Image: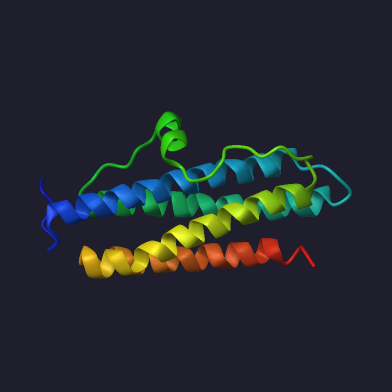
Length: 157
């Protein structure tokens, strides 16, 4: 059934295209955080293992919410690794040792990249595409990434 939410289809299509990029970034960051959880080593293993678990659980919820937002505005969310890797702004893997600080540095850079992308879409979603709901949604998403980035950044002096 056609979505009739007061936003023209060309606008929801443009917003959906940007949200799809967000979804791909979120999914790749989720996967990288899972990798950190599984493969971290070192004297602080237990603390890092639990920390990364907390973060990947938060990211799992964010991935789902972005995919659902794409559906709410009338489009389909991609769900293949091939598409995710083609559209993401992030790199799949950075060479580093499996210590907590190495993982954290890489993940922090990814969160900051997502924050910048989200911030750059808040105004266009509202003003250009008249999709205030998605503008508000990505503002909240950005705030969650800012909190997660702060947690990662706090490990560095």
